Length: 250
Image (cartoon, rainbow, N blue to C red; front, side, top):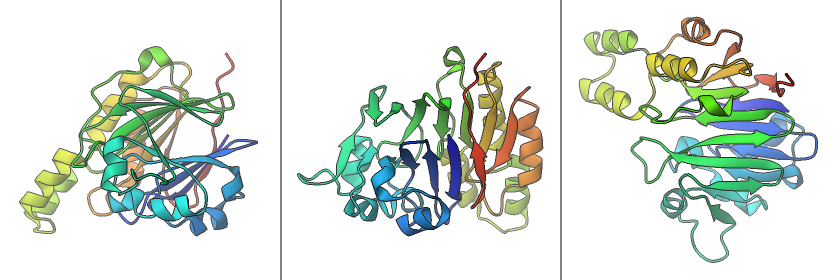
């Protein structure tokens, strides 16, 4: 299974999981043309597009993907906010704590904490890569997945508390804006806690998502998270990053 990062951050989020016979697009925050240019994936290979919530940097191009024949999968709240619940819309809702098969991909959904209609995180399973936890745009994750023995974790690490505090003092960001960031996005500390709580012998890869351009430090974030994942390789998502996600065969 190949993971390709099309983009990660406030300018637009989109990731492609490409298996031998099909592909799953995670988030529709960038144009589909970018996907076609960056990967070997064409619409006919896409089993579906999985969207976490309706904000533009995650779902701004959902209707364009649908117009190209790709089905959008998200919570009913997200689809309603996107205006994609009408008859004839190329969209399907996933229930909270529900399981859905999207081609060969099995997707389990769970609710997150964000200023959106009904934001979801997902556990994505496929024979080629095992289990992937996908979490973005949430204050924290109120669940533990350790019994699932995750193979890969894709998790938001948006900001550092210390960097955010320094930026408030330097008046680079208002206190109100900083408070909103803390209430709606995952900090480096929370990302480390999530990875540590779900570390297991199968965990091979951790990919840090949606780093803030002004409130993060990519190298330091990767170094800190690596302390929480004993055997896993840690990456920071950036446009063009491509990683092979393999299933632990032990």
